[in-house]
Image (spheres, rainbow, N blue to C red):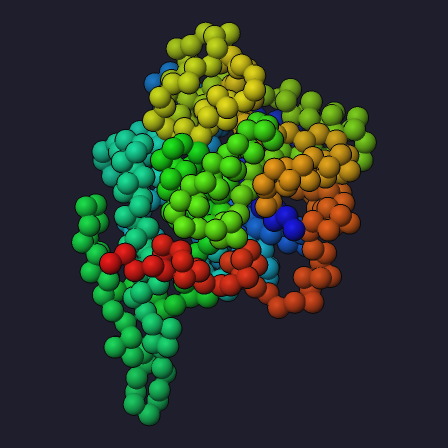
Length: 450
């Protein structure tokens, strides 16, 4: 079975920023409207999606030309609202769909974020996932913590951040702590609630956690790091790995590397899932799908991609000739963004990469439901457990996937039918993905570090 997650953000465009020019892309007006999101959530849940995956950013980036002007002009992840408050509204109109939100270990204090995510896990009946990021932009750090933290050090701190959260979620409250005993006047057993007394290199957190155990305790852990540090971090913590690849061959190589790193940390293949991002352009005929793809690509201006590439890599690409080859620089930002091009089987110029990155470095699957399903099956054979579906035009892309592609995948036995899901009790997100609501005993979050 394939899991399908819709890639979203609380901005005007989740995938192609220049798509605001297209008449059937309604998110520029809808992203500030709760009804837009609840309607989209119902479409996705009814249409067979496993989850909604909300990306997020934390700064108005000024990497390109050393100014925020290009970012503002191109609307590069701007304006953008916070997805956390939205999840409760979406949960109220759905029963099954998972709700994955992005939050940074570099910018949140662990105690505060642990409480927020526990609250959402309660309000969603255990359907929350956390996309763990470490942030990358200079201004993100200046705005929130004051001092920029280099790439590898961010992951070192993130590792400790996770240990703090695990202690709060998994150890601070015993499962039977809530008594509500009117005879003794005891709401909760003081002996079942404890301090975590974390005293580490980056964080001092005494605890205890303020939230009683939630349906999942720890949210399902998503991670998208593709650098060496990011992959090592994922091998220790991630349950779902979201990645960008321009080709199936590049993904297959990535999947092999992840498997080896997971094995080295004692984690088996059934303890994590791989979700490469793909961008489907699905229509009843190949010609219609190609026309849709061409319509999107023709809206893109090269500067939009250069701004996005510069902001994500924390590196100014305005200094390069657009016909120059894209170099494997030692970027301190989101290194996986560059790795997708470096690992590809063709050489990219800066200008070509900019146009491509303006719609993200993913496999673009253009065709009928049958041809797109054929290609998804090949990715499944290469190691994909499902896909993060990028939507250039919202809700058009997702509606086409729900009405045309999902029935084809269901006919081939790759996704369950809505009738099948209606016959079962709603599940937590982890239960739906792994069969149990709680982290496995072998996960680092359940293993006592002492």
